[in-house]
Amino acid sequence: NMTTIDKKSSVDEIILFFQSNFKFINKKIEEFNKNTKLLQIYKDIDYPMLEILSEMEIEGITVSKSKMSKLSKKLAKQLVDLKSEAFLLSKKEFNLNSPKQLSEIFYNDLDYPIIKKTPKGAPSTDASVLEELSKDYELPKIILKYRELEKIRSTYVDGLIPEVTDDGKIHTHFNLFGTATGRLSSEKPNLQNIPNKTELGQQIRDFFISEPSKKFVISDYSQIELRVLAHLSKDSDMVSILKDKDSDIHSETAARIFNTKLSDVSSDMRRKAKEVNFGLIYGMEAFGLSKSLNISQKEASELITSYFNQFPKIKGFLDGVVNQAEQDTYTTTLLGRKRYIRELSSSNFQVKAAGKRIAMNAPIQGTASDIMKIAMIRVSNKLSKVDGANLLLQIHDELIVETDEFHLKKVKEIVTKEMESALTLDVPLFVNTKVSESLANFN
DNA sequence: GACTCACGC
DNA sequence: GCGTGAGTC
Image 1 (spheres, rainbow, N blue to C red):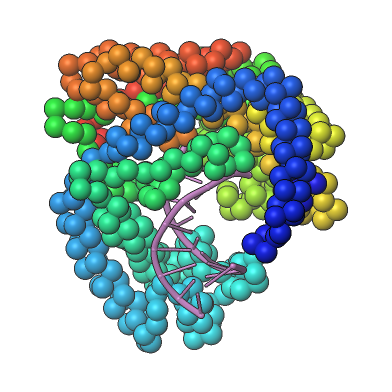
Image 2 (image 1 turned 135 degrees about the vertical axis):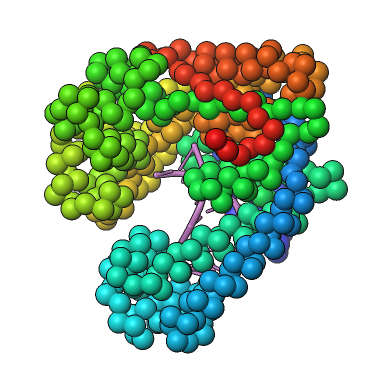
């Protein structure tokens, strides 16, 4: 137990504080040093990462301010129009940014049906609700569009412009110890959640450009978390699917859970299987799956049962992880990185269930992030001998490197090879690498 | 500071 | 599942 100290403590109290807490801290350091795995993770991974992240932050990434201000004006205009359309339909002016005021309009003035409530019990107006209401009403469609544009404008356009420094770049800050699983986080600004899904999102990505006569090398791991799960669970079917570079894991999963030939897998079956795979690595249960697929809990639970029948060792592995975590109070990654899970000792059913999901997810997410860190350290070492080549960003399963065109081929090879060989699992690690002058995916 | 919502992996 | 951030109240 740590003793405490405050501003009014006497000299004697302060001396006592240091005497007792040095003992405590020394004991902790001893424990840490005896755990050779944790010590090894620190020496081999986290300590080397510090300098690499520092270099990435200092290097920064160039943005086009002209593209930013152009889109800012365009969005501002579109938002004004959407706002007047909304007021016309609601026959009333209100703050479109206020979910509270919006729900007044929806559920008091217009008598829309309440589809879902927020955790606090208020009638929800989130995107899934707006989509459902859009089938019968016009206003929710307008709100959906307004929310999309306003999110992009406030966070990624007008929010990003003040972050541009005098060198014309954005310098994020990476936290090495910001997450419970071992992942990095990024803040001020967060460059790990730049939009990627929509067309408008790609216009944000297009702000980020390589320097003159340089190119981005962008490499991402293919299905790294499912590969980690295949390795950890040793499920033979899963392993054999992922050994084949050309196989489509979601279609293969669909064929198995729906008990059909691969050639008979419909796009809807694939969509459902993809969501099952997605939910699997998050420890999702029938409740969560039914929500994300918009199906009944019964149907969701049948999908999960069918999945675990087809991939029995995955079921066994996940149950084993939870049991072990309940005994140990923590989970470990493949390399031994620990995550303590207090929720597992809760007597509250819901808290405990959340603890189980955490236990299932942490070794998968944590192992994947260990692999990426190893890759970054090796890439960084190799790139230090290449003039004009720098690591710029890491977005969990993706690395963004900048290089002058002369070294392009060499850099591509370094990044791809070091990522694929970072750790040897029972399944190969595949990396997709592309070259571009901006972060946008304009196909 | 709690809450709601929304962006990423 | 893991994060960060904008905005309201």
